[in-house]
Length: 320
Image (tube, rainbow, N blue to C red):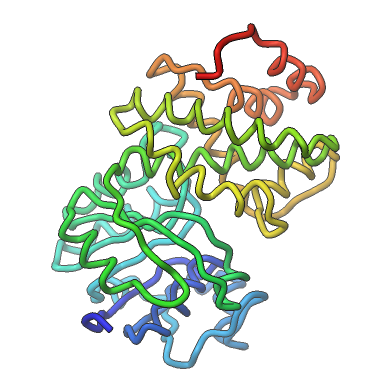
């Protein structure tokens, strides 16, 4: 194994707890942070587990941000719209030799900023992102998958991949921070669209959704200064199976429940991301028909049949 690191994970939800379990398994010294008011954190203290996994006793539990900021690597896994508030709390701690890794997917609604940009407003230390497909349930059972780590600092990216590579995750080297962050966030919106198709009994259209969704996200990435082909990598298209088809996908399930008029009480990041994408679409002059349709349904109470028909009634044009 690579050098043993002292790692803190902020966020004791299903993904944050999986990261703590995984990195402990690799031999790192791991602590998992949660607020005392968090029901998930309370359950870890009482039972050492959640609905998906059991934490080894070698993973320390803490509600102290001071302890978190003493670690070599601080991994953040919280809701995308909560990141700014968290970074404001961390801003009181002086800069140090630590690094930050964002294991979350989204875009800030109020500013349209990528999450690494939000974090960089408050911290001078290097920041990386850890993205890609996979579900906690599958990883915990040992099912392998491929993921991406990217950063403006290639040295940090390379070090993290050396430290974090193991069974069952294979990492690839990211080379486009803009493309990877936008692609990862936008795939959750396409996931909601997939669930909406499921809810209307139109699952056979998911193939077309995948093709056209990737195309429009690639256009946006290019307009923002990223590499269009990143949309076809692990951050976006490579994550479609886990997001558009899996029963574990919160975004797909949310879209299906929305169409059926059923309640859904889990976090579906695509709900927030689509609002941010509307700002980016306007700012960069990029047409995002699928994302716009999802936005109109979620925020403007559009009619599902009319929105779907509008997508397919668009003027005929060459595929590429």
